[in-house]
Image (cartoon, rainbow, N blue to C red; front, side):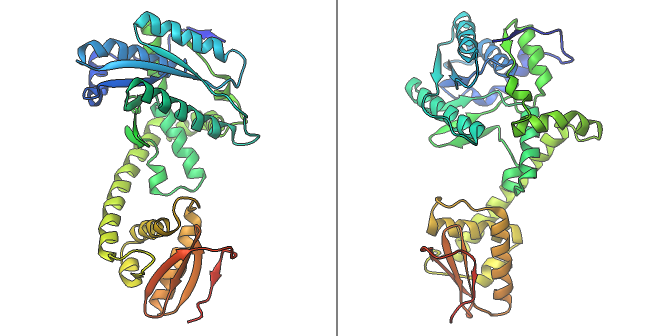
Length: 346
């Protein structure tokens, strides 16, 4: 473990008044589980919430640290957090990730395990909200990663200040703050913190993007501007979702019974694309993930066929989509056939 209290950074600590504004949306929650890794961001969050809670009425704080056991010193880091929580009077639990580790996709598996363990701890403590210390820098990195993966508006909206994960809500009150301000806050509150060597390990995608962030900032693509783009994409996503809900209601019948392709494809492309995905999910469920590129290809082929009064059959996400010459689009679960485009036989 590396305990770090580095020299003063170029950042202004979060003031009590600012913290009041950041945590205002948490005031109605009776109990909060704070996810604390031991890094500067989460330690700052821990200290700020501990200072804020006495003025927040009945709000009760709990904290948890997930020890993934992926590197030497992780147990000592979790113990450091436990000691800090004890000094702040916040009940703390160390959650250990046991079991086999995947050969590939380790970070994603660790993330899933982390949220599963936190959800179990939240249920044990009677918390319906988990509070995380995601920052503006995290948001910017997430946006770059999703752009590289070809995400659509929903993915580019990135993390929200408040989102749902199963029966729980995830709150991210620090999402608009840059990391250097959280470092300054942890220092001002005299809280120890650690640095994770994985944050700069080029084997990990996020770390590779983190390394190029300074060069992007010099070109004007700062973390602040990237995070602003994510907020704008979130607004766009909300508008698309609302229009998609209206269109789905207008189509009426279920996907298995068939919908009017003319009505579907008359809507703006992004809206009809969204509804097409919903229809596929209604039939095939969530088992087969829908890749945006495949969705776009299928959407374009069906729309072109519908405009020409042609019949077409195509598979997508574990579902067979059949467009007849009358402009009726129906769907059924895919069998053991090869996926692709199939000219209709009728």
